[in-house]
Length: 159
Image (cartoon, rainbow, N blue to C red):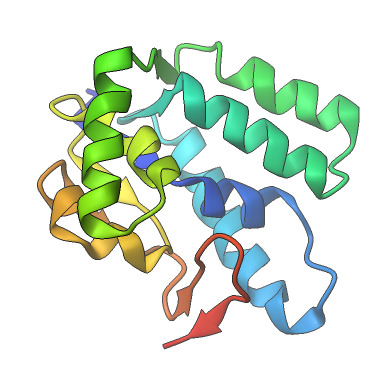
């Protein structure tokens, strides 16, 4: 029975698939890779992604020279019954923009989560922005990569 409806933030997809160039971050890759493997094979889980996030994940993998064939496999995976891909509407963009202005958090983080409000019951992210009340109102937020904090454009750090 499916009872877990998840959002997995892009930073987890990134570190789960891309082997870091710095050895000190190999533990992040191992944790993220194991987490993704467990979730993807868990029949009680449905993973939700927005159309924006699919594009974001594919771009992050491209930027980190993830092989084309493997990117194609990841992309195909989003079209399976394991995933629910939700379109981002212009009204979602309006809400995301306003929340971003008020909080100072990237609009990208909001575009990943806001369209999923009412559809998911868990968010997994290593980005500390997701601890903000705007995201906590959408669903329970957990960091499966703890003690690591990973924010876009910054070097991963341990808490």
